[in-house]
Length: 346
Image: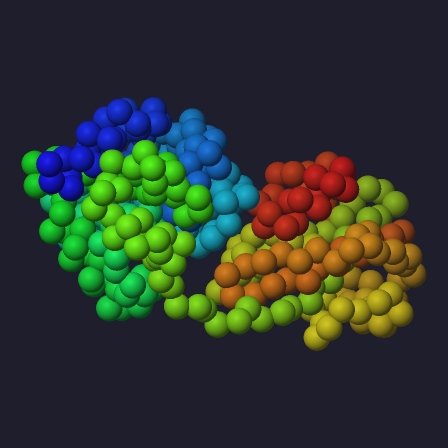
């Protein structure tokens, strides 16, 4: 029995029942694939359901305010994906009259859609023979064939894509793609896979050479930079606080946060006080300052670690930009800020 037949048979017996597997609607498949990029199914499923309920069609998503899309995305991270999702929806509605691209080449034209997502949509919705290659696929193929080419290199990307394209079932591309991703997620797991019950164990190079934990190979990324964030949580006597919208192309673009003072190292209250006095929200007013979190919160992003302190700044009044603390839950914020808001219990 050939590789694809074994894989699809395993899939038919072991696949999870998921809502996006009950449809060929490209909008639903696209939405699920964007949400599930670097997100496990159990985390992504509630987001998918919420998006479908709030925006049941691409027209609904295109009409939405970006702030509503970002708020619904809150907690998933990689907020650029949500912005790209919204941009692509508006493009489909405005330029394509709501008709979803029906082939791999045209799907690649959508903002935020790369090889993997285009292949998934093209195969699942339109039966195009386009092999997907994601983290699960890299792991399955590298282990079974004993390939040690780094998966995050240009050579590796080409090599694994070509191999997946060679293996894909030409008559059942949708089943094959979903099967190999599911197999990597459930059977050929990153840690402690149960190789004894694996249908591929007789021919698996990694299993037979006892190098399961060595594959796939990945080039180590550059060391993350350390940044030191001091968020100023203003609280006025009339129950107001301040949130600011982040600008520019950096992290958390268009999300809201408390006023921020970034320092070169961790600072104490005596070092921070003079910096707050210079802040335009104070402008000579008296204030009381207290550190909320005794332990620094380290929020790890892909290329930087944010060493974070939340400082409570009590003032008599705030300027016009103050908002009621009762409204704070309506704003789209990074998960770091969201966790604080929940803990502080405004």
